[in-house]
Length: 418
Image 1 (cartoon, rainbow, N blue to C red):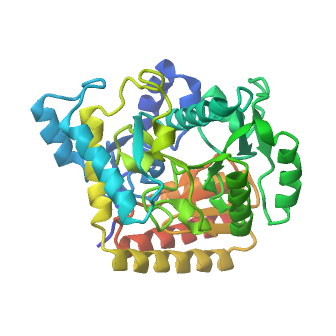
Image 2 (cartoon, helix red, strand yellow):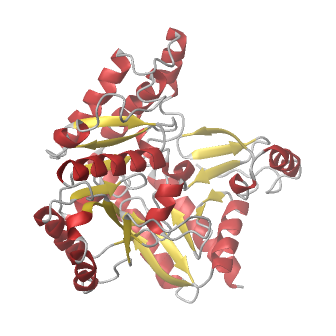
């Protein structure tokens, strides 16, 4: 059975009319995606308005971990009930979701995970985590507000979250953020500690992006372990950003598990909601209870529709056969290695974990061409806007669909080589 069915020329001639109409009304920053007009989706397939069927190796930017449309029936039930928003009033839907995420974390052995703050987006979750860390720090010392972060990480597009990763030309440098260079080996630890020692009395927290978003590159495990140990000794709160890496994307429930450490806080979103905009901060009781009532809140926090969607997503992910999933990961990794070995002239590195891979090419131009050729052949990949593409199919994809997609990728790279 084929999972790609191209009926008309890609991109469809009429798609440009829709793209141009959107461009006339929408902010420029949201434009520039592949010229496909999405119409419907199911599990790991997406269709455009003209019946062309694509294999989705993006999970709609890491959102559909549980597969497209998996949560739809539960959403319909909630819509029929008539309650889609309740501000912060108690609902059964919120109770169910909070207990679901707690139970899942405990099942995975995460004893640090005790309470949750629900939000709407990944950036909002990260800003909320930073606020919690600063409240905790200033309880002990009014100057203890500094956050440690890493150059080249991706924590969001708000002013604060952008400042965590780099000095944007549009933003002022934030004196309450220490940005460390992204470590490529363990020896960076010694230089970083020298930097932190000069201001350690003012540091309240550190935020790690579990893997570097644009390249899917993980930090050296020894570096992370020793940095976390240092933070524990200095009473610095440890937070992992699991917006992309959470909910089995890299294999385990959370990506930080690869480092064999335990944080104080995690932030999550994307795959958590299965397509509904919902995110959260989870962690230790004493931290989640530090903000007073009204000091940390969100208009859409715990809205019934979002809670139902997230609960359905967690249920679907928890029900994936673990042995089949591990077999799928093994096959995926094998094909990634084969592609890298076959195209070392264009590829400089590959980074892979679970059903995630970052393919780094010799230039942005090559990455763009490969992404475009994949689209023309019916495969959607994540074009990072840099010299890489990322692969992140729904975790519910079948083995034959996965193989088909990898074969298309191989052919697309061959085409670009010519």
